[in-house]
Every structure is written in structure tokens, then in C-alpha cells.
Length: 54
Image (cartoon, rainbow, N blue to C red; front, side, top):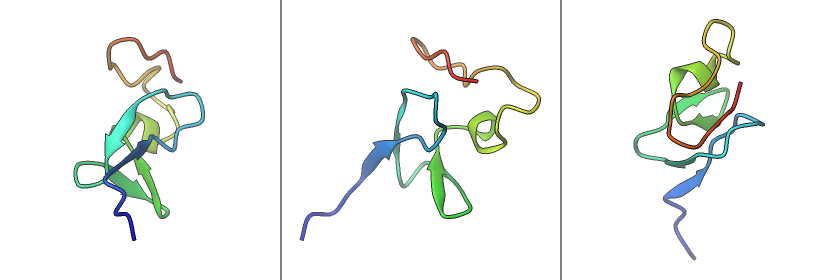
């Protein structure tokens, strides 16, 4: 069996890869930051270079 350690952020428009160990887990999904986990209610993007999510 292969252990998954990174995956795409669960935010639909985010392009970030997130380490499962460092991710923010919400509703059994993994996010790169609190802004993505909250659905970009207050913050526009995640702030990571090259990503324009939100």
C-alpha cells in the first residue's frame, strides 16, 4: 500500500499541494490555509505564490 503524504488543497480553485501533516482539516477535507478552509468568506486568496484561488 502507498501512503499519501501530500494532496491538492480541497479548495476548488486552489492550485496548492498540501502536506497532510500540516494541512487544516475541515469536514474530512484538507486545505492549505484557513482562508481556503473557510471558503474565502473574508480572504480573497490563499496568499501562496502563483495561486489565485478565492
